[in-house]
Image (cartoon, rainbow, N blue to C red; front, side, top):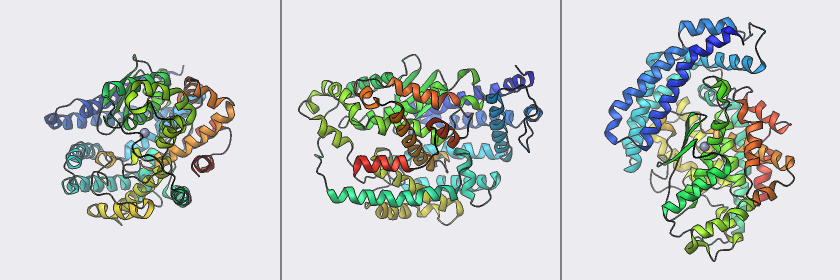
Length: 500
Ligand code: ZN
C-alpha cells in the first residue's frame, strides 16, 4: 500500500463522514422533521457543507493530492498504485478543481438559499402558488448563474452545470442527442395516438389498503436484492433514494389508496438507485471509487428496473397472481393481458414521474430547454409558467390546470439542481443499451424473470456497473459493459418495437 495515498484517504475521511451526516439531516428534514425545525436545520446544513468544503480545499489536502498527481497535467507521480487508485486520483483532482472554484462564502450562501428554497417550494406547491416561490427561485437562479461563471465554461454557461452531473457533457452534445430524439418521439406518439387503442380507464383503479401496498413494496425490494438489514423505506411527497453508506440505504415512496401503481413503480425505481449505492465497494468508502459514475448512470439503474423490467410481461407473469391475492376486489376478474396493456398505456400527462415510457423524455426535453434559457438569461424566472405551458402544448398537446401539475411539480429547482434533468434521459438511453445487452447475454432472460428470478439482473448490474464506482467515465463504463459503442438506437428501437 502506498503511504501517501493512505494519508490522503485519512485526510478525506472526515469529509466523507460529514457528507453522510448531511444526507441524514436531509433525510430527516424530508421524512420526520416538524415544520419549525427548519430554522435551525438551515444553519446545521450550512455548517456541515462549510466543514466539508474546508477539508476539501485545505492546504494540507491540496499538498497531499499534488504530491500524488499533477493538478495541471493530471500525470500521476508515483508508480506503485493500482489502476483503480490512479483513477481515484484523477477523479479527486477533478473534484478538487471544482471545489476550489467555489468560495466557502458562496457555498454557504447557496446552501442557505436552497434550504429555504426547499421549504418555500413545499408550501408553494401545497398552496398552488408560483408567486410564493418566485422570490426564492429568483435567488437560486441568480446564484446558479454565478456558479456557472465561477466554474467556467467554453461555449454555454449551462455547460458548467451539466459537467457537475455528467462529466464532459455539453449543451452541444445534449442538443445533438435531444433534437433528433424529440422528433422521433413526437412521431411515435402521433402514431400510437392515431391507433387509438381503447384501454379501460378504471382497470387500475380501486381500493388498495396502504398496509397491503407496503407489504408488496417490501417484498419486491427484497426480491431485487436488498434486505431489511440494509434499507429503510419511508413516505414523502416526492420519492427519492439516499444512502448514508453502502450498508444504510434510505428510500421513500408515496402511497395512494385509490391507485397502487404510483407507489409500486416508484419503489422499484428507488430500489434500482438503492442497489447501486449498496454495491459500491465499501472498502473505498469516502473516495470516488465508492461513488456512482454519474447521475445519468445512476438513473439508468433505476429506469432499467422501473420500465424495462417491471413494465414487461414476464415480470407480471410472476407478480400478477401476487397482486390479485393482495387486492382481490380490484383484480380477481382482470386478465393479465389487459393489466399489461393498462400499465403500459401511452397517454400524455402532466406529472413527469408518472409519465409513460414514450412521453417521459419529452418532459425532460421541456425542462432542459427551460433551464438552458434561464441560465443564459433568455428566459426570466417569472415567465416560467408561460414557457412551461407553451412547451407542454407543443410536445404533448396538453396544458396543466394548475402550478402543482405544472412548473411546481419537481423538487430539483428548489435544491438548486440545475443541469440535472438531462441525466434522466441519458439514464434511459444507458438503460436501453444495458437492457439490449442483458437480452443478448441471457437467451433465457424473459423466462427467468417470469419464474420470479430477478437477482441474476442485480448480479449483472453489480458486476458491469456498480462495483466500478467512478473508475471509468460514464460513457466508457457503459461501453465496457455492453462491449460496443454507445448510441440511442437500442432505446429507440425498443420503444418503437414495444409500442408501435
Ligand atoms: Zn431516479
